[in-house]
Image 1 (tube, helix red, strand yellow):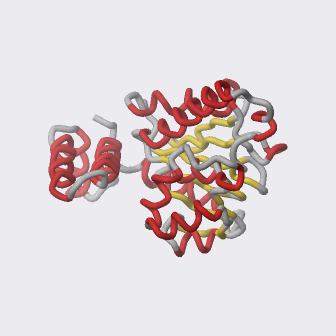
Image 2 (cartoon, helix red, strand yellow):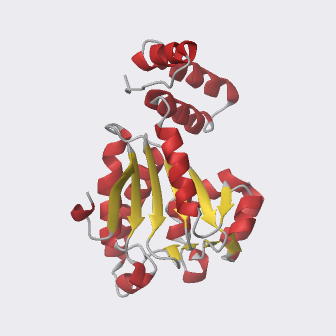
Length: 264
């Protein structure tokens, strides 16, 4: 799979688990137009046709950066029209990650600034290296977060903290990100990717329809009131009743053996 891409390394690192590595280490994995296109190409089909994939981990190449944000050298001299067209590619790529049926974990191995921080926030949850740093610095450049940052950050850590971070552009540490609810776990630098992959493998071992429906119920349920969320939850639950995996899960439990889920 990796041969298809210029800016990404995409590999199956364990059964049904995909590792996506942002691969521009010479520029701290900065997001250029080509990377945006490739992220969009990779993630768009996974909303409706995930195939056999059951877990995805996104990380950065090298040890310095997860993603340093948009490639400002590429943007130098862009016309307003070209800037809008490029940003539309980034929007489509990030929205595709947020809409991905397969759970996506960010393994943040270094700096995640601006669009890099937004990319981590677009994933379902984040594991971070103890040396990672985060920031949404867009207002210091005359722009603002525009790839989900103003929506995903306050949903992770609350409106007031998100306003402080976005309006000041001040960087913050992995430990602060954990304390404020944005990061799920902080690991030693050499442990963050293995930890994320281990969690992805654990998720991949579970019934895929169950995982997908639970993810949908959580995500979309939070967009409305409690009663609407409960209705969505029951509809998602009923999706599992006629499945082979539901029958297999109960049979395996009663027979005291590991289940063999097939996604049907």
